[in-house]
Length: 157
Image 1 (cartoon, rainbow, N blue to C red):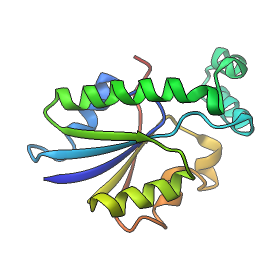
Image 2 (image 1 turned 120 degrees about the vertical axis):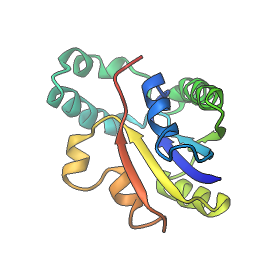
Image 3 (image 1 turned 45 degrees about the horizontal axis):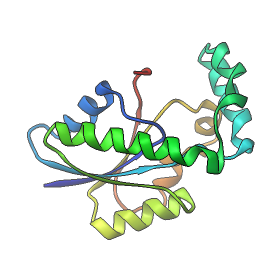
Image 4 (image 1 turned 60 degrees about the vertical axis):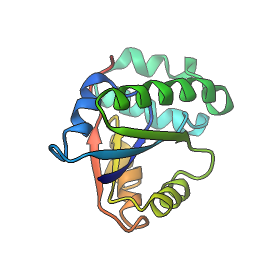
């Protein structure tokens, strides 16, 4: 069985689930999902810039309405549960947790804990961070010791 650590930032769509569960053909996959609830207000500007770059001006204008930090934990837990149910429905093993510490430390710890074969970072595009190689996938490649695959999540449900 192949062991993947899947780092996400929102609930998986059905297209996302199909995408990650078919990456290894017929081989069984055990997913260990990490979800980071939305960050603090310092991240808001970067998300708004990403929204503008994607042509989603309405989303950029509503960035201040989205729960942040501690307020986002409940939403994050629900998104994690929905994602785990969807992965299990395909016959995959799936466990998960919210990230409560620095994301790269949590990722490295989980990779070591489960003996992961790979890390999959599935996120929306983050153009500013990607340009400067400050996105989670770029940073994880230097820390986790296993291959890191960066995938863009599909549109909203």
